[in-house]
Amino acid sequence: MKIILTTLCLVLLNTMVVQAQRLNLEPGLNAMARNGVPEGWTEVAWLSADGEMTVSASQGDSFEVALELSGLVPDGTYAVWGASRGTFNVRIRPIAGNTPDSFVATAEGTAIHAVSIPDDADHRFLVITYQPDGVPAGNKPGDAAFGHFIAEFPEPRN
Image 1 (cartoon, rainbow, N blue to C red):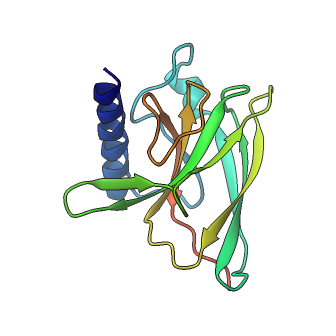
Image 2 (image 1 turned 90 degrees about the vertical axis):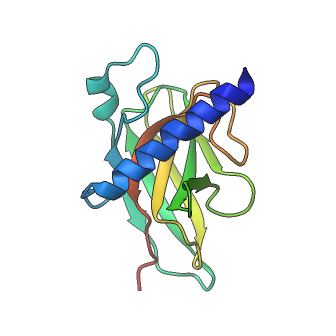
């Protein structure tokens, strides 16, 4: 059952990224609900989430992206991913290394989080997922992860 759920989650997230490639994304973070919304949330409430992304200049071999988010699931666990188009599918993977950058929202549903990104990262999108099981994801989104934000992948400021 776990393999089926994981596969379904990855198919939904892949679909979300492929659809995003066809959109004209607004600059910065865009709330999304392409693979549904968590139990207890309406699509309107889910899409009312808001976020700002501030990109730093390169610090030699990496740069930092500061995220300021609101409208999150209170005390919810989130993960930040890189996504890009492969030959046959969309690859959603950690931005650097083998584990994603995870964080937990406050009780008010807000978060301030910084992500260190290698200058040579080759992703097309930055994706933020909600992990409803409360477990930070491994090297792929969890079994029932919900995409919450998507943005064109940032580049370091000069």
